[in-house]
Structure formats: C-alpha cells, structure tokens
Length: 182
Image (cartoon, rainbow, N blue to C red; front, side):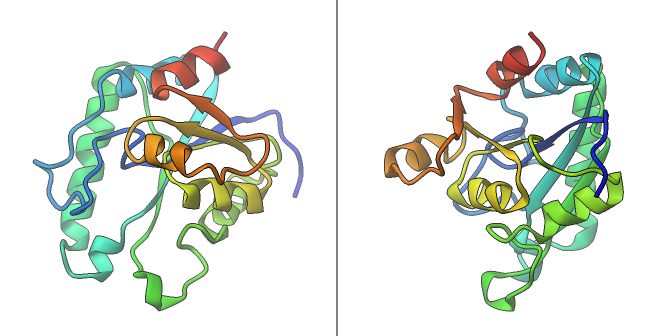
C-alpha cells in the first residue's frame, strides 16, 4: 500500500468522542459528546487531518438497537462536530458480537485495514486513538501509532498496565489535538 502525504487520524467513538456506558449507547438521547471532543475534531481538521471513526457496535448484533438507530446516532455525531466547525470524513463500524468471530471487530485489525484500503494509505504511523486495550491491539496490528485517552474506559485500561510498548497517553481528545496540531 502506498505511503501518502494524506494526514489521517483514526478515532474510536464511545469513550473518545462521546460518553461511554457499560450498558451500551443504545439511542440518540444516550449519545452525548464528551466536553471538548467536537472542538478537538475541528482543530484536527483545521490542521489538515482527515478524521475517521472506527467503532465496535455490537449492540446491533445483540439486538439492543437497529441500524436505523445507529445511523441516527452517527448523524447526531456529524451535526455536533459540524456545529464546532469540524467534520468526520468517514465512519467505519463493526456490528458483530464477540462470538461471531469476524475479522472487523477490534481487537482484530480488519476494520483498520479496510480504512487503509479505502484511503489508499499505509497506516504506519497514523495515530489510532482509543480508550480500551482492544483499540490499542487493533492499532498495533495495523501498524498505527497508539494513543490512549483517559476518558471512557481509559483510566481502567491504563491501570491494567498491559499497554503495548510506545503507547502515548493523553487526558482526552482535546489534549490529543493539542499535541498533533502543535
């Protein structure tokens, strides 16, 4: 896959852009942006980054919500980011459950590899931002630069102490944007 001058950053959704819940985000009303996340995405855009979301959404496979609801949640996310002056260039999601044994569900790298194909770009060195160990594992397999945020499950993930070598840690998405847009 060719290298590219395209500046790309990959973000997990729940716990990075919006609040997370152990009971899943199942409705548009439950999808609430984390403070400063939309502005952080706008800052990344203004610095030349294409922002792509890669998110496991097993709630679809579990029957907790349907595709129409997932689409409405993503529509709300796009609107919130647009109101802050930014944009999300693409959203990739895995609707499968753990026991479906698909290749797209993080910690596997299939979803990230699809992003590489669609953007015709190696992911070597592309920041992959997440709050869970599975985000870091998928990013490592895809050759990304690993970035953990302390929001969502981030503090619990950090406390577990099993992060891949070289993982960068930031308080939140705003701190990530400040670092990469400096």
